[in-house]
Amino acid sequence: MDEIKTDLSNSTIDACIQHASDVLAIQLGLVEDKGYDFAPEFKDMTTQLYLFGVVWRFAESLKVGGNARDTAFSALEEMLIRDGMRRNSARKRVTFLKQMSQVADGRNALAVAIGYQSQSGDNSLVEVFDHYVDDFQVSGDFWRLYDRTKKTMLYGGLIVAFVVIWIITLYLPGNSTIAIFAASLMAAALFVVPVFLIGLLVYKVKIKNAKNSTSSTT
Image (tube, rainbow, N blue to C red; front, side, top):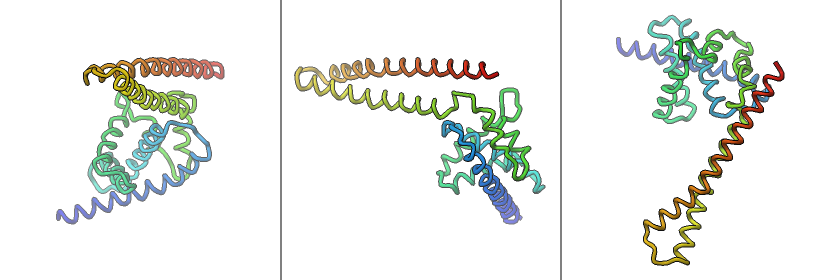
């Protein structure tokens, strides 16, 4: 009896994954044609939430019993694993998607709702992304700004700390290891903090400009 249930469960998961793959192949082509510039993490999360909605409805149509919502998340996790993600990472990803699948008042997130209501061959994933084209905080431009600032702080801070250690060791011998380490940390902080503040200022300016641009077009 348990073997029959396992086979049924596996066949259900396989059917859900196949359906998700078929829908994704069509929808991604339509999205690529639009030329959106979103942050990669936002694009992946939104697409996965959309797929969850699609698979949730499909699982309900199979009428095999059990919780269709849980089945959809299980199928999504297995799909991520088959796409090359480690099982533990896929499990953590699905846990994150479960948290993001509903908004504060308990309603389904936009991507989930549109995915659930989608029809074969429509532009539903494009419809999801169209809601965010004017949101600078999820744009590729903001992501690149964040990535550049993060790398500048990391590598710049390390270089400054190394240079300070080298100068103190070479020209000011006799200092303790703790003193050298403290001086290098202080020098790195003097580099990192201004870079962070400049990045924050640029971010605020870009957010303000984006809001002004949005308000002027409405």
